[in-house]
Image (cartoon, rainbow, N blue to C red; front, top):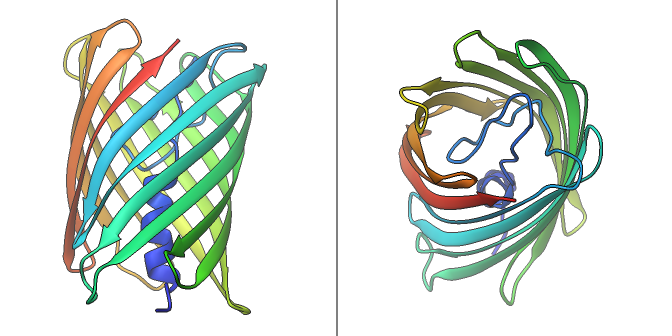
Amino acid sequence: MQIGFGRIRLILATVALATAGTAVRAERPMSVDDAGTLTRGDAKLEFGWSKDDETRGFEGAVGYGPIDNVEVEVSFARARDGSVSPSASLRALGAAIKWVPLQAETGLSAGLKYEYGNEHAVGDSSAHVQSLLGLASWAFAGGPLLHLNVGREWAREEGSGSAANTWGIGFDLPFTEALHGTVESYGAENSSPDRAVGLRYELRDGLKFSGAIGRGNDRSFANLGVAWEF
């Protein structure tokens, strides 16, 4: 079974860690990333369930701030693709580093993120994916956040390669101090955009639950998750 660039992007999306920053943050359930990093010495754990059309699975991730303005991440995902017969078991591992030299409590924050991922169908072919993202966030007075991603992804499977430009835009809107709503749209070159809406609730300091639903490219998708910062 050939995994294909579109399927690789689908699984890598579930692997990607939505990190939290000290100045601005694009947390779960958003797919669009933020221009922010964890405070030096802080860490974050995430776990979630997701579905994308007939593919369902779970993912986990950990992020750490080793030095100022830098965050490193590792992540994994397990999923089952029911669109093929027999269904395919998918596995993915990922790692990323984010550098955000410009961070502000209000106004503009900006930086870069590099990601690498390996994904394979059990007993079949594997694929390697790399991406480089430009990150920008704008923090408005009162709490709303606007996030913009522009980048490029490269995928290689069994000697053949693909590449595509990517983009994303998202809003994080505080309803109360604990409850936030999210709206986002994102996509890749030569495909229609995906759009999603979500909610995030902070049960206590550092512990947050979230969920989102979306649609795009003739399919629906959703995710539920929990994140803990410490």
